[in-house]
Image 1: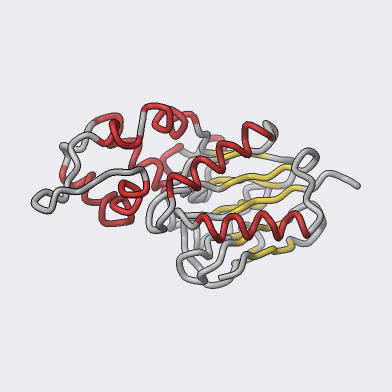
Image 2: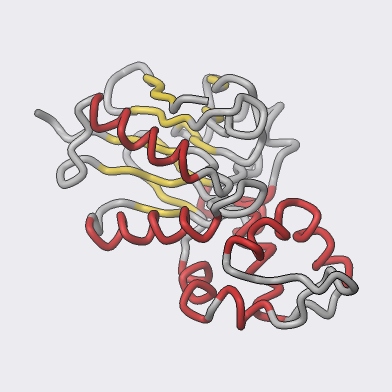
Length: 229
């Protein structure tokens, strides 16, 4: 059977749905030793089991080195704090209030009832995971697709798009009909159902749809596989 190509959208600490989606992919005929899986980032925050999700993704990458994991904006937020400390209240609150608290607790962190701001994130998250977040690329490319977490800048080649935009951009990417020469597969922008446009595919469904989405891209038409809600 020819090699297949899959992408998996934002997981956001939802380990149960992640396990269920991988099971669905195996039922779909996915062979992890033959086929390629691209994770689009945002493994952490919001859901209850971020640490478990990160460990599972890393385990799959170790077992299948041809699989790819991209960095998402939630890893980018946490990485900033791990590299620069949590002293910047704005940057800390941006992460903490968008699911960072749940991530901190999933890593075994405890909160003082009088202080809801941990002072040493590295001691909780660990240097090993920090370095792994820092190693993740912002883009992956095949002959037909660009894979990024956030999107690309219209009018600018994919490789010329700033790494920050690859992770964070929404507009003007989402409303653009610009042709990058390949379809852009992304997450980052929550949707109830996968969105297919001539120039992009959005599979970030966990927050609004309540389930994880994978897209199989080996044929002429994208084909979606979803977890249970």
